[in-house]
Image (cartoon, rainbow, N blue to C red):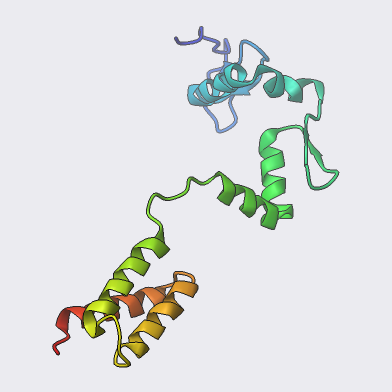
Length: 160
């Protein structure tokens, strides 16, 4: 559903700052209809918070300090810049957990490779098995992945 036309009468100027359309709710002016459409979506999404700027209300308070903001965007920007560690922790907590557990997949692959290459017992497999154990405790990194790929390559070309 499109909003009624709110073109400003008698404004034929098409300069950079020319106001061509007005918001029918709060009379905020826009130079492009796309800007008005985004603005109207804000009225629909959260009318109270969206109109807070008209009365000078400050409705968004930082949970980590005493800073207050009139818009949610202002609070997000402050949180990201002033409290990056907390912001990143919250962002990571919201991220869905991957269905593929890196450690589970690689543990099984490397364990099977060590068993296939050297058998389940004996001293010949000890260096590979120790490498495997060290991989389990390391965090994934490009270097570790390169080493794992090299080990996989060795498993494919190894002849006894």
